[in-house]
Length: 273
Length: 106
Image (cartoon, rainbow over all chains, first blue to last red; front, side, top):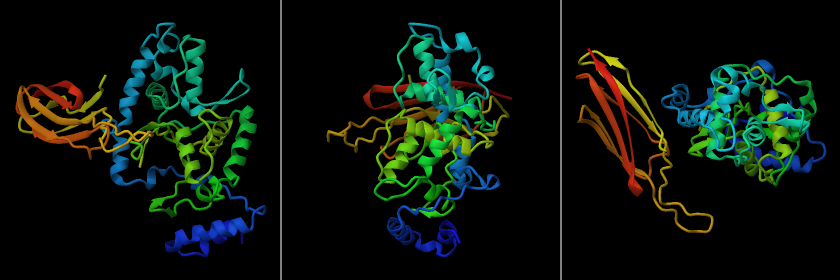
């Protein structure tokens, strides 16, 4: 029996906290021989939307109740606004509802110039600098989130399509990070999200970590946030050192996670608790 | 600029009960938090919400620091006559925002 399977079957649900502590100790004792987490079978994958309360699901489903709609509206304004230095997004790309449909489903995408993967936020900033002669928008700034939310909204309902073979090395690097134990708790992302999804951690359901709805309006944050913010959050929870916004590690993790969620429908902008 | 989202039916039958949903962007800073240097962050919230139908008040609410950011207020009313429903939010630091939506009652 694999250690992961043993972990799942042999222990009653109610002692999950004690189990986690024991698991961490056992893992520390057997370091070096850390088991590789099993991938979630494609058919068993699900969005954490299904784990949310009926009230939170209703909030996401109704654009008039989903607070992220406020950012989408701001994003539409920014899309048409002409910066002092160059053309508006709409001057080159036209109506986003047509030209940007399906774009967010392909990100992170390969950038031939930088010879690496870039996420949607980075793509927006490249456009700003190169085409609009404007300054980069800082990570998690309201305008960057608004534009990202507006673009991601145009792909709602489409399947995540990370299939570019040039991304293979980035995906492999992301997988390696996802499965590598790190931080003071000596946990890998996979210990929770591959091995123990669906069980509870501190009263919350452990999700499978499929980033289907970013940027998300997280009720805990009381605002919209990117996938990189969520990943940095997770690393703090693991008592590991967070990577800086835009770090290659975060891009690799993002690319791996989106590839892992390939084929799943986009919910952006989603609401999460 | 504050941004509000209003959802209500554009037409209704006289006497029909309609649902009105309002969502407005606002930080709703509680006044109980401190900055990273320990300085208190001043309260900055929406304190009042009023809805009027052709000038007559149909719904009002007082808001407090425990209300989450981007307040979402939904309520029901009886459709009486065609006209304009106005929504007004006021709050700390002279905050004021308003929206108007037309409705036809047959």
